Amino acid sequence: MSHYRFLPRIPTRIGKLGIVLFFTSLSAAFVGSIISIYVNSFVNNESIVGFIFTALVLVSIIANFMIIPLVESRSKKKLFIYAGALTALGYFAYSIINNFKIFILIAVCVTILTSMRIAAAGLLIEHSSNKRNLSKNEGLMYTFINLAWVIGPLIVGLILAKLDVLKYIFLLSSGLMIIAVILFVFFRINYSGKRKKLDSHPLKNFKDFFKNKHRVKAYVLSGGVNLWWGLIFIYMPLLIIKNLSDSWVGFFLFFTTVPLIFLEYYFGSLASRRGYKKIFLWGYLIPAAAAIISFFFFSNIWIIIIALSLASIGLSMIEGTTEAYFFDILKPREDQRFYSPYNTAVDAGNLFGEFIPAIILLFLPFKSIFLFYAICMLTLGFLSLNIKNVFESKRKAGKF
Image 1 (cartoon, rainbow, N blue to C red):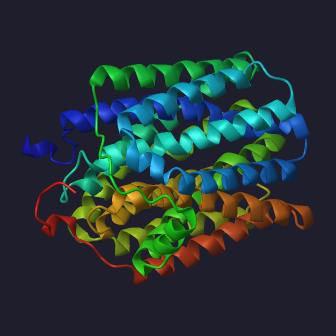
Image 2 (cartoon, helix red, strand yellow; image 1 turned 90 degrees about the vertical axis):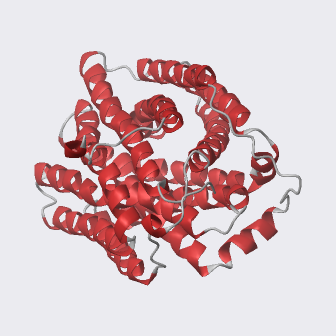
Image 3 (cartoon, helix red, strand yellow; image 1 turned 45 degrees about the vertical axis):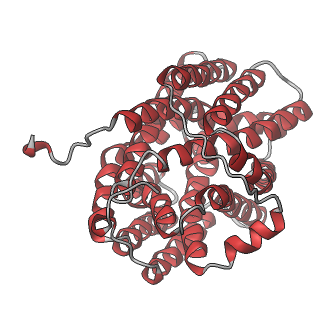
């Protein structure tokens, strides 16, 4: 077996969680692959699409602070089940509605439910790990997640090439989320972790979270990952539609996700042994270089597709490890209080990565947003040099 030491050995509970997250992610990948096209069918304006997603991001940020008492006081198992089932219902509704106002209402509900489901899943992963293997387990979980994000867009591309009807994608995504919930119940994955003293003041939680510089750095670095995905999942599909066909959106998302599957576990393991600094630095410099190339070769869509696909090598270094780093710097019993606020880094990154380009597109040509993303990635790369370097492999084993 020593010849296969780079292959992950999947603990039973982590393996079950990985399977469940694969199906939830496959469901989300179906929706994520077409959602900007779906919204654009209502408004027919690229800039307005960006503003709509910005508004939903703000909803998510507020929700993550408001649900802290719920996360602390309720079983994580029940939260995951209820949020997953209701999200499936929301995806089903997308397939049958034609009214823009109703869509916005449902989208707000789905956004809040997604915040609850992600918080529950993240805490389940943390409490299924010990202090020495969290980074590896996070890398493994993101391998399952990104496998879904490879398969999902590819299937979407094939379906749209044949049918060109978005409602079937939403129906499939609803069914996949239901499968995930059923598997979660069948696997009997549980962690209640209820706290008697609840942190029920959102403003105080906000202040306490951001007064620690190490948490702030972890937050900003995690947000940078999601800032980049704004380019990939919101703006690149719009560019591809102009130059190629709808089906190429799915193929592009397939290409950008492939490196994540093969490399995230490896880089999670590497970070566990050698620390986070260099992993984070190169993780941000690689997409910065890809964005610069895309800016200068904007007239060639194929160069852009290749450059952004290779940029995912950098993203595989930081996507799972940023979350592991956050848990590594927390003090005991801070996880349930601060994990939901930390998850707003996803929203803050999305907000910055979707809203600012939307503003840019009001005044400048499309190619200019690549320069924006390049500057952001370079800045985050240099910020990585100032983090607290943690070596999980040198810690004593034990639960959080």
